[in-house]
Length: 156
Length: 257
Image (cartoon, rainbow over all chains, first blue to last red; front, side, top):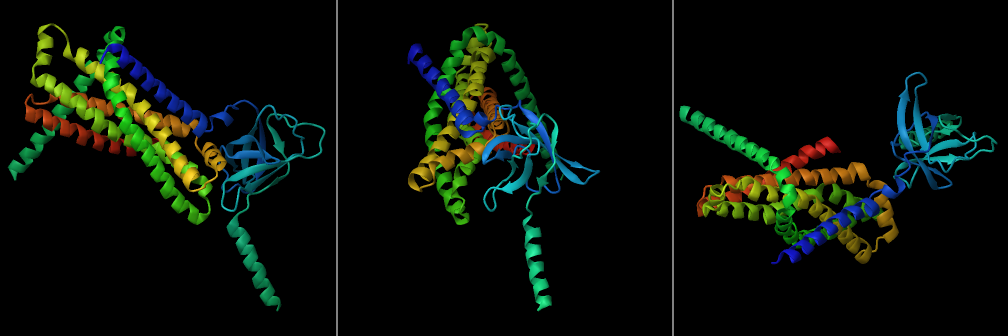
Protein backbone atom coordinates (compact mmCIF):
# COMPACT_ATOMS: atom_id res chain seq x y z
CA UNK A 1 0.00 0.00 0.00
CA UNK A 2 1.58 3.25 -1.02
CA UNK A 3 1.79 6.19 1.34
CA UNK A 4 -0.50 8.45 -0.61
CA UNK A 5 -3.38 6.02 -0.60
CA UNK A 6 -2.94 5.32 3.12
CA UNK A 7 -2.92 9.02 3.90
CA UNK A 8 -6.04 9.63 1.84
CA UNK A 9 -7.88 6.83 3.64
CA UNK A 10 -6.75 8.10 7.04
CA UNK A 11 -7.87 11.59 6.07
CA UNK A 12 -11.27 10.24 5.09
CA UNK A 13 -11.49 8.30 8.35
CA UNK A 14 -10.71 11.34 10.47
CA UNK A 15 -13.14 13.45 8.44
CA UNK A 16 -15.85 10.81 8.93
CA UNK A 17 -15.17 10.70 12.67
CA UNK A 18 -15.35 14.47 12.99
CA UNK A 19 -18.49 14.52 10.85
CA UNK A 20 -20.06 11.95 13.18
CA UNK A 21 -19.16 14.07 16.21
CA UNK A 22 -20.56 17.12 14.45
CA UNK A 23 -23.77 15.27 13.65
CA UNK A 24 -24.12 14.14 17.28
CA UNK A 25 -23.60 17.71 18.44
CA UNK A 26 -25.91 19.40 15.94
CA UNK A 27 -28.59 16.87 15.13
CA UNK A 28 -28.85 14.75 18.28
CA UNK A 29 -28.14 17.19 21.08
CA UNK A 30 -29.73 20.47 22.03
CA UNK A 31 -26.86 22.62 20.77
CA UNK A 32 -29.03 24.67 18.43
CA UNK A 33 -31.33 25.72 21.24
CA UNK A 34 -28.56 25.96 23.78
CA UNK A 35 -26.64 29.03 22.71
CA UNK A 36 -28.55 31.43 24.94
CA UNK A 37 -26.41 31.69 28.03
CA UNK A 38 -27.03 35.44 27.88
CA UNK A 39 -30.49 36.87 28.33
CA UNK A 40 -32.04 38.08 31.53
CA UNK A 41 -33.21 36.36 34.67
CA UNK A 42 -36.54 36.68 36.39
CA UNK A 43 -37.61 35.11 39.65
CA UNK A 44 -40.85 33.34 40.49
CA UNK A 45 -41.87 31.89 43.85
CA UNK A 46 -43.99 28.77 43.79
CA UNK A 47 -45.69 26.91 46.62
CA UNK A 48 -44.83 23.63 44.98
CA UNK A 49 -42.56 22.85 42.05
CA UNK A 50 -42.51 19.07 42.27
CA UNK A 51 -41.24 17.61 39.02
CA UNK A 52 -39.76 20.85 37.68
CA UNK A 53 -36.05 20.60 36.96
CA UNK A 54 -33.21 22.94 36.16
CA UNK A 55 -33.17 23.39 32.36
CA UNK A 56 -36.89 22.70 32.07
CA UNK A 57 -38.51 24.70 29.32
CA UNK A 58 -40.18 28.07 29.90
CA UNK A 59 -42.84 28.83 27.32
CA UNK A 60 -45.20 31.58 26.38
CA UNK A 61 -48.07 30.82 24.01
CA UNK A 62 -46.49 27.38 23.63
CA UNK A 63 -43.20 28.70 22.28
CA UNK A 64 -40.05 28.10 24.27
CA UNK A 65 -38.56 31.46 25.24
CA UNK A 66 -36.22 30.44 28.05
CA UNK A 67 -35.13 27.86 30.56
CA UNK A 68 -35.25 27.30 34.31
CA UNK A 69 -31.75 28.18 35.47
CA UNK A 70 -31.97 27.45 39.18
CA UNK A 71 -34.40 26.13 41.81
CA UNK A 72 -33.79 26.79 45.50
CA UNK A 73 -35.83 26.52 48.66
CA UNK A 74 -36.51 29.65 50.65
CA UNK A 75 -36.41 28.68 54.37
CA UNK A 76 -38.29 31.83 55.46
CA UNK A 77 -41.37 31.69 53.28
CA UNK A 78 -41.20 27.88 52.77
CA UNK A 79 -41.56 28.43 49.07
CA UNK A 80 -39.54 27.33 46.09
CA UNK A 81 -37.64 30.11 44.35
CA UNK A 82 -37.36 29.41 40.63
CA UNK A 83 -34.94 31.46 38.59
CA UNK A 84 -35.93 31.68 34.94
CA UNK A 85 -33.57 32.79 32.22
CA UNK A 86 -35.37 34.39 29.30
CA UNK A 87 -33.64 34.88 25.96
CA UNK A 88 -32.62 38.47 25.46
CA UNK A 89 -34.64 38.92 22.27
CA UNK A 90 -37.87 38.49 24.26
CA UNK A 91 -37.51 41.64 26.36
CA UNK A 92 -41.04 43.00 26.06
CA UNK A 93 -42.79 40.79 28.62
CA UNK A 94 -45.18 42.91 30.72
CA UNK A 95 -44.46 43.32 34.40
CA UNK A 96 -47.61 41.52 35.55
CA UNK A 97 -46.84 38.33 33.63
CA UNK A 98 -48.06 35.23 35.49
CA UNK A 99 -46.27 31.91 35.71
CA UNK A 100 -47.80 28.45 36.11
CA UNK A 101 -46.30 25.00 36.13
CA UNK A 102 -47.83 22.68 33.57
CA UNK A 103 -47.25 19.12 32.50
CA UNK A 104 -46.59 18.21 28.90
CA UNK A 105 -48.99 15.36 28.28
CA UNK A 106 -50.45 13.32 31.11
CA UNK A 107 -47.16 11.99 32.46
CA UNK A 108 -44.71 14.16 30.59
CA UNK A 109 -42.12 16.68 31.68
CA UNK A 110 -43.04 19.71 33.75
CA UNK A 111 -42.55 23.12 32.25
CA UNK A 112 -43.23 26.72 33.20
CA UNK A 113 -45.89 28.49 31.16
CA UNK A 114 -45.91 32.28 31.21
CA UNK A 115 -48.99 34.31 30.44
CA UNK A 116 -48.71 38.00 29.61
CA UNK A 117 -50.56 40.62 31.58
CA UNK A 118 -51.47 44.13 30.50
CA UNK A 119 -48.86 46.26 32.24
CA UNK A 120 -47.12 48.98 30.26
CA UNK A 121 -43.78 48.34 31.93
CA UNK A 122 -41.57 45.43 30.92
CA UNK A 123 -39.86 42.82 33.04
CA UNK A 124 -36.18 43.46 33.73
CA UNK A 125 -33.32 41.38 35.09
CA UNK A 126 -33.97 39.98 38.60
CA UNK A 127 -37.60 41.10 38.62
CA UNK A 128 -40.03 39.00 40.60
CA UNK A 129 -43.27 37.60 39.21
CA UNK A 130 -46.18 38.33 41.55
CA UNK A 131 -48.75 35.78 40.49
CA UNK A 132 -47.79 32.15 40.23
CA UNK A 133 -49.64 28.89 40.15
CA UNK A 134 -48.08 25.76 41.55
CA UNK A 135 -47.35 22.42 40.08
CA UNK A 136 -50.23 20.02 39.93
CA UNK A 137 -49.60 17.12 42.29
CA UNK A 138 -51.55 14.11 41.16
CA UNK A 139 -51.85 12.58 44.65
CA UNK A 140 -53.40 15.77 46.07
CA UNK A 141 -55.85 15.94 43.22
CA UNK A 142 -56.88 12.33 43.68
CA UNK A 143 -57.27 12.72 47.45
CA UNK A 144 -59.44 15.82 46.97
CA UNK A 145 -61.53 13.88 44.48
CA UNK A 146 -61.93 10.96 46.88
CA UNK A 147 -62.70 13.31 49.79
CA UNK A 148 -65.49 14.95 47.82
CA UNK A 149 -67.06 11.54 47.33
CA UNK A 150 -66.84 10.78 51.05
CA UNK A 151 -68.51 14.13 51.86
CA UNK A 152 -71.28 13.34 49.47
CA UNK A 153 -71.84 9.96 51.08
CA UNK A 154 -72.15 11.60 54.51
CA UNK A 155 -74.72 14.06 53.28
CA UNK A 156 -76.80 11.27 51.82
CA UNK B 1 -1.54 -23.61 54.30
CA UNK B 2 1.71 -21.64 54.23
CA UNK B 3 2.14 -22.69 50.60
CA UNK B 4 -1.22 -21.20 49.66
CA UNK B 5 -0.35 -17.94 51.35
CA UNK B 6 3.02 -17.96 49.62
CA UNK B 7 1.34 -18.52 46.27
CA UNK B 8 -1.06 -15.69 46.95
CA UNK B 9 1.82 -13.41 47.84
CA UNK B 10 3.79 -14.46 44.78
CA UNK B 11 0.91 -13.77 42.41
CA UNK B 12 0.23 -10.49 44.16
CA UNK B 13 3.85 -9.43 43.75
CA UNK B 14 3.80 -10.51 40.13
CA UNK B 15 0.68 -8.46 39.52
CA UNK B 16 2.20 -5.34 41.00
CA UNK B 17 5.46 -5.91 39.12
CA UNK B 18 3.55 -6.04 35.85
CA UNK B 19 1.52 -3.00 36.82
CA UNK B 20 4.72 -1.13 37.62
CA UNK B 21 6.34 -2.16 34.34
CA UNK B 22 3.21 -1.08 32.47
CA UNK B 23 3.33 2.32 34.15
CA UNK B 24 7.03 2.79 33.36
CA UNK B 25 6.30 1.84 29.75
CA UNK B 26 3.43 4.34 29.60
CA UNK B 27 5.74 7.07 30.90
CA UNK B 28 8.30 6.16 28.21
CA UNK B 29 5.64 6.17 25.51
CA UNK B 30 4.27 9.54 26.57
CA UNK B 31 7.84 10.87 26.84
CA UNK B 32 8.31 9.87 23.21
CA UNK B 33 5.36 11.92 21.95
CA UNK B 34 7.30 15.21 21.42
CA UNK B 35 9.88 13.49 19.23
CA UNK B 36 6.99 11.98 17.28
CA UNK B 37 5.64 15.32 16.11
CA UNK B 38 8.05 15.88 13.19
CA UNK B 39 7.37 12.33 11.98
CA UNK B 40 3.60 12.22 11.87
CA UNK B 41 3.62 9.88 8.87
CA UNK B 42 4.40 7.02 11.28
CA UNK B 43 1.25 7.87 13.25
CA UNK B 44 -0.78 8.19 10.06
CA UNK B 45 0.21 4.67 9.01
CA UNK B 46 -0.81 3.35 12.41
CA UNK B 47 -4.13 5.20 12.29
CA UNK B 48 -4.70 3.40 9.03
CA UNK B 49 -4.15 -0.05 10.51
CA UNK B 50 -5.82 0.70 13.86
CA UNK B 51 -8.65 3.00 12.82
CA UNK B 52 -9.46 2.70 9.14
CA UNK B 53 -9.36 -1.07 9.14
CA UNK B 54 -11.67 -1.18 12.20
CA UNK B 55 -14.17 1.04 10.44
CA UNK B 56 -16.15 -1.69 8.75
CA UNK B 57 -16.88 -3.68 11.90
CA UNK B 58 -17.74 -0.46 13.76
CA UNK B 59 -20.11 0.68 11.02
CA UNK B 60 -21.90 -2.66 10.73
CA UNK B 61 -22.26 -3.26 14.45
CA UNK B 62 -23.27 0.36 15.09
CA UNK B 63 -25.99 0.11 12.51
CA UNK B 64 -27.32 -3.17 13.88
CA UNK B 65 -27.13 -2.12 17.53
CA UNK B 66 -29.12 0.99 16.63
CA UNK B 67 -31.65 -1.05 14.69
CA UNK B 68 -32.10 -3.52 17.55
CA UNK B 69 -32.50 -0.65 20.01
CA UNK B 70 -35.12 0.85 17.74
CA UNK B 71 -37.02 -2.41 17.50
CA UNK B 72 -36.87 -3.37 21.18
CA UNK B 73 -37.47 0.16 22.37
CA UNK B 74 -40.50 0.50 20.15
CA UNK B 75 -42.01 -2.74 21.41
CA UNK B 76 -41.70 -1.57 25.01
CA UNK B 77 -42.62 2.08 24.51
CA UNK B 78 -45.69 1.34 22.41
CA UNK B 79 -47.27 -0.31 25.47
CA UNK B 80 -47.19 3.06 27.20
CA UNK B 81 -48.26 4.94 24.12
CA UNK B 82 -45.06 6.94 24.15
CA UNK B 83 -43.29 5.64 21.07
CA UNK B 84 -42.35 9.24 20.22
CA UNK B 85 -39.66 9.02 22.87
CA UNK B 86 -37.95 6.26 20.89
CA UNK B 87 -35.34 8.74 19.64
CA UNK B 88 -34.48 9.73 23.20
CA UNK B 89 -34.04 6.12 24.25
CA UNK B 90 -31.93 5.16 21.25
CA UNK B 91 -29.71 8.23 21.30
CA UNK B 92 -29.15 8.37 25.05
CA UNK B 93 -28.26 4.71 25.35
CA UNK B 94 -25.92 4.97 22.36
CA UNK B 95 -24.22 8.22 23.26
CA UNK B 96 -23.84 7.52 26.95
CA UNK B 97 -23.10 3.81 27.09
CA UNK B 98 -23.25 1.60 24.06
CA UNK B 99 -21.28 3.82 21.71
CA UNK B 100 -18.13 4.11 23.81
CA UNK B 101 -18.36 0.65 25.41
CA UNK B 102 -19.23 -1.53 22.43
CA UNK B 103 -16.84 0.40 20.19
CA UNK B 104 -14.10 -0.12 22.78
CA UNK B 105 -14.83 -3.85 23.03
CA UNK B 106 -14.75 -4.19 19.24
CA UNK B 107 -11.65 -2.04 19.13
CA UNK B 108 -9.94 -4.31 21.66
CA UNK B 109 -10.84 -7.36 19.62
CA UNK B 110 -10.06 -5.91 16.21
CA UNK B 111 -7.16 -3.51 16.78
CA UNK B 112 -5.82 -4.33 20.25
CA UNK B 113 -5.17 -7.97 19.50
CA UNK B 114 -3.48 -7.05 16.21
CA UNK B 115 -1.23 -4.55 17.99
CA UNK B 116 -0.20 -7.09 20.60
CA UNK B 117 0.47 -9.80 18.05
CA UNK B 118 2.49 -7.44 15.87
CA UNK B 119 4.66 -6.10 18.67
CA UNK B 120 5.02 -9.55 20.24
CA UNK B 121 6.18 -11.02 16.93
CA UNK B 122 8.59 -8.12 16.46
CA UNK B 123 10.02 -9.05 19.83
CA UNK B 124 10.07 -12.79 19.08
CA UNK B 125 11.86 -12.24 15.76
CA UNK B 126 14.29 -9.88 17.53
CA UNK B 127 13.38 -6.88 15.42
CA UNK B 128 13.13 -4.79 18.56
CA UNK B 129 16.61 -5.88 19.67
CA UNK B 130 17.90 -5.11 16.18
CA UNK B 131 16.56 -1.59 16.49
CA UNK B 132 18.30 -1.17 19.80
CA UNK B 133 21.53 -2.32 18.15
CA UNK B 134 21.07 0.49 15.64
CA UNK B 135 20.61 2.93 18.54
CA UNK B 136 16.91 3.40 17.76
CA UNK B 137 14.65 3.42 20.79
CA UNK B 138 12.02 0.77 19.93
CA UNK B 139 9.58 2.31 22.39
CA UNK B 140 9.65 5.63 20.57
CA UNK B 141 9.84 4.18 17.09
CA UNK B 142 7.31 1.34 17.45
CA UNK B 143 5.12 1.83 20.51
CA UNK B 144 4.52 5.59 20.62
CA UNK B 145 2.96 5.89 17.14
CA UNK B 146 0.70 2.94 17.85
CA UNK B 147 -0.37 4.38 21.17
CA UNK B 148 -1.08 7.78 19.63
CA UNK B 149 -3.02 6.14 16.81
CA UNK B 150 -5.25 4.30 19.29
CA UNK B 151 -5.74 7.47 21.31
CA UNK B 152 -6.85 9.36 18.19
CA UNK B 153 -8.89 6.61 16.53
CA UNK B 154 -10.99 5.42 19.45
CA UNK B 155 -13.07 8.59 20.04
CA UNK B 156 -13.66 8.90 16.31
CA UNK B 157 -14.76 5.27 16.07
CA UNK B 158 -17.10 5.67 19.06
CA UNK B 159 -18.62 8.81 17.54
CA UNK B 160 -19.15 7.02 14.23
CA UNK B 161 -20.70 4.09 16.10
CA UNK B 162 -23.19 6.35 17.91
CA UNK B 163 -24.06 8.37 14.83
CA UNK B 164 -24.64 5.29 12.70
CA UNK B 165 -26.64 3.73 15.53
CA UNK B 166 -28.96 6.73 15.75
CA UNK B 167 -29.51 6.49 12.00
CA UNK B 168 -30.14 2.74 12.31
CA UNK B 169 -32.70 3.39 15.06
CA UNK B 170 -34.35 5.98 12.86
CA UNK B 171 -34.43 3.54 9.96
CA UNK B 172 -36.28 0.91 12.01
CA UNK B 173 -38.39 3.24 14.15
CA UNK B 174 -39.43 5.77 11.54
CA UNK B 175 -39.00 3.80 8.35
CA UNK B 176 -40.44 0.43 9.33
CA UNK B 177 -42.52 0.92 12.47
CA UNK B 178 -44.05 4.29 11.69
CA UNK B 179 -42.85 6.57 14.46
CA UNK B 180 -43.17 10.20 13.44
CA UNK B 181 -39.91 11.47 11.99
CA UNK B 182 -40.21 14.94 13.49
CA UNK B 183 -40.99 13.55 16.94
CA UNK B 184 -38.03 11.17 16.72
CA UNK B 185 -35.55 14.01 16.20
CA UNK B 186 -37.20 16.78 18.23
CA UNK B 187 -37.68 14.66 21.36
CA UNK B 188 -34.08 13.56 20.98
CA UNK B 189 -32.84 17.12 20.72
CA UNK B 190 -34.93 18.18 23.70
CA UNK B 191 -33.46 15.49 25.96
CA UNK B 192 -29.87 14.96 24.87
CA UNK B 193 -27.55 17.53 26.35
CA UNK B 194 -24.37 18.51 24.54
CA UNK B 195 -22.25 18.74 27.69
CA UNK B 196 -23.83 16.16 29.98
CA UNK B 197 -24.28 13.45 27.39
CA UNK B 198 -22.16 13.93 24.30
CA UNK B 199 -19.03 15.41 25.89
CA UNK B 200 -19.09 12.78 28.61
CA UNK B 201 -19.46 10.07 25.99
CA UNK B 202 -16.44 11.44 24.14
CA UNK B 203 -14.44 11.58 27.37
CA UNK B 204 -15.39 7.98 28.05
CA UNK B 205 -14.23 6.88 24.62
CA UNK B 206 -10.92 8.74 25.01
CA UNK B 207 -10.33 6.99 28.33
CA UNK B 208 -11.17 3.62 26.79
CA UNK B 209 -8.92 4.33 23.82
CA UNK B 210 -5.96 5.10 26.07
CA UNK B 211 -6.56 2.09 28.29
CA UNK B 212 -7.12 -0.43 25.50
CA UNK B 213 -4.09 0.65 23.46
CA UNK B 214 -1.98 0.85 26.60
CA UNK B 215 -2.86 -2.73 27.53
CA UNK B 216 -2.36 -3.94 23.95
CA UNK B 217 1.02 -2.26 23.55
CA UNK B 218 2.21 -3.36 26.97
CA UNK B 219 1.17 -6.98 26.51
CA UNK B 220 2.96 -7.08 23.18
CA UNK B 221 6.10 -5.50 24.56
CA UNK B 222 6.05 -7.66 27.67
CA UNK B 223 5.22 -10.92 25.86
CA UNK B 224 7.42 -13.98 26.25
CA UNK B 225 9.19 -14.02 22.85
CA UNK B 226 7.91 -17.41 21.72
CA UNK B 227 4.93 -18.27 19.57
CA UNK B 228 3.09 -19.54 22.65
CA UNK B 229 3.97 -16.41 24.59
CA UNK B 230 2.66 -14.16 21.81
CA UNK B 231 -0.58 -16.09 21.54
CA UNK B 232 -1.09 -15.86 25.30
CA UNK B 233 -0.34 -12.17 25.27
CA UNK B 234 -2.90 -11.64 22.52
CA UNK B 235 -5.55 -13.48 24.50
CA UNK B 236 -4.68 -11.51 27.60
CA UNK B 237 -5.04 -8.25 25.69
CA UNK B 238 -8.58 -9.02 24.62
CA UNK B 239 -9.68 -10.40 27.99
CA UNK B 240 -8.04 -7.75 30.16
CA UNK B 241 -9.00 -4.79 28.06
CA UNK B 242 -12.62 -5.96 27.83
CA UNK B 243 -12.79 -6.39 31.59
CA UNK B 244 -11.12 -3.06 32.27
CA UNK B 245 -13.42 -1.28 29.81
CA UNK B 246 -16.52 -2.69 31.49
CA UNK B 247 -15.24 -1.92 34.97
CA UNK B 248 -14.10 1.58 34.09
CA UNK B 249 -17.40 2.22 32.37
CA UNK B 250 -19.25 1.63 35.62
CA UNK B 251 -16.92 3.96 37.52
CA UNK B 252 -17.09 6.67 34.85
CA UNK B 253 -20.88 6.42 34.67
CA UNK B 254 -21.13 6.70 38.44
CA UNK B 255 -18.98 9.84 38.36
CA UNK B 256 -20.54 11.48 35.31
CA UNK B 257 -24.28 10.92 35.41
